[in-house]
Length: 474
Image (cartoon, rainbow, N blue to C red; front, side, top):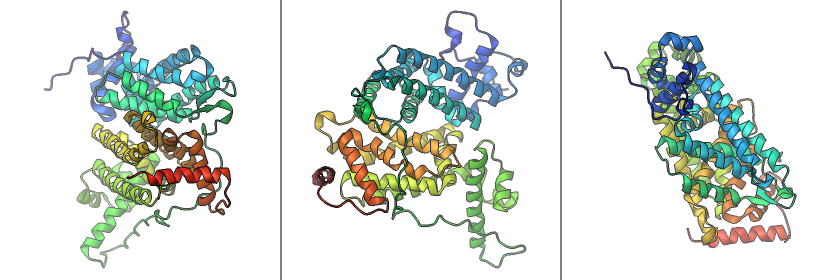
């Protein structure tokens, strides 16, 4: 018999505030400990009660199942963080509201690292209801910040950023560090606040806090004109095809069906029966090709990640200047996510639910994307170059924006995020004014409309930005 693990007393929870804990609090603390140790999949009822030090009947006195306990934990911690954000924002001038919200996140991570890790990272592996609760918490924080910013004088510089996406990026960045066991976060906090400050412009001129309607952008030449077709089902009876073609047909149909089932129901809820029904194969065919659902997911993720990185790199290196290269890379990323919503869901949403190793894989993919930003450091003045943490924050911001679009399966506006994401990437390197001028010029020339003619002040300044970038050695 395997010995049960004693409760983890190192976690920061309400249990350690100098009063006797209730059984409910112990169960919530047990969920935090179990999820932080083994991810969502490892946070079973057995693990939760082992960490909480209560009986199984006690667990079911409070919760119907593991998911209900997980969701209650998310909502409890979400409310506590929101309270701290509101207090921090309320202590500052309106123009410093976003700084106050970020400071509150770092304070929460410093005083309650286990709870912060759960709320900022482990929640992403939860059910659709848990993700809804997480996103609702971001919305409430964003509303708090935006209300305060609305009181800033028109000429006061404030960060021209989408608040919910920025807070989501900060949470992802903090959660990743806490998962790796980092506790010295002061340096990261200062670098993040400096990065946020690089987007400051007069309140009256703020433009990028939410996506604005734009004319359709011409399709990227690096994106396939049509998505790969789903292989046709083979007819009844023995197919008159070579065996390897039959196997490949079945394999591809299972891959397509798995992506669709996960996008529809979530990774945890999608079953082998769902997949085989969508694919039009039987269980024996499935198990001849794959050991389980996770092996199929791994195949989809690896194939999609390689394909996306190749597309992005091809588009990036087609540009003449660094701003143009970033624009082309973001154009293919946003349009690809819009044209393949099931694939976007696999890479941006479902990947967290598979295993802790899958989370590391997602974070490695984010780190790989920063390579496209490093060249931008040559655009900035030496004493104004963004810190490495800022590059990470930009990428997690991109990921957060695309994640939100992927969760809204009915939305077909992902490609319209391009200008906002270009602003997120370019502004810390070239400044808010030059970034805006460049984006407006690209929208005119790449939206299918006629390119701007003449030698206007805007055209001349954009040309300077491009020439400066082209003159910088790679």
